[in-house]
Length: 284
Image (cartoon, rainbow, N blue to C red; front, side, top):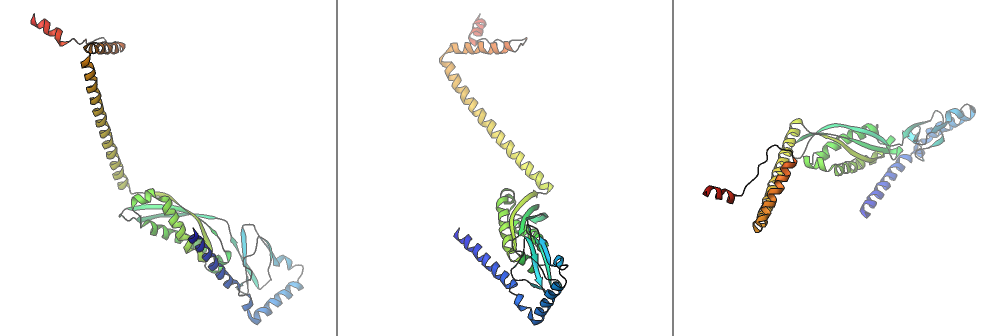
């Protein structure tokens, strides 16, 4: 736990250093730059109050504004939410959406570790954590994150076999989230969550797995039936030993069997006779 906290602290420190390096450029605009800024301020004062509508901007609660002065990021980082002030002619700004963004990873044909081709897709949730880095360090953070998610999905699944892909989705998603988060840290992107949506198997493989599962179920059914017959034979053996100790018990069993047959409304009733009686008739 302490190691994870140290890594997070190191990442935050490096991120702040990169941001400060980008922002500490206001003093490097040079003499000509300061002259242009002074002329812009003078123009704003001359054209008051009309220039107020051009200088005051508003950003929403979920947005941040990155101000560029003569092409350099203004000291202080992202502005907002609310009102902020820019100079005409010398300042420009870019709005960055700070809300969580979701996108689907298109189905990727992946060859697993045990040489099985599967089609896997997923979904990624991310947000802009540092607006300054997201604007200054990469052209299109959204497109880059989408492409990186596709390649990361293929790379992670390529190290797993089919059984692990089908059973360890949470572990795979967590591994992808950690990899994406580390890779997009320099872009000011925070990957919040990654989920594996569906794993599609080839039709022939589905049939083979279904046949294997059916054969396994049939084998278990035969084993259960054999165990049942074995238990039944043991019970019959014990019953025969009990009946052998009491001959009258066999007659009671005959009567109980006749009662069961008569309850079913059969027209023919077979009444068993003891062999001793038959032997007496045969002797006569």
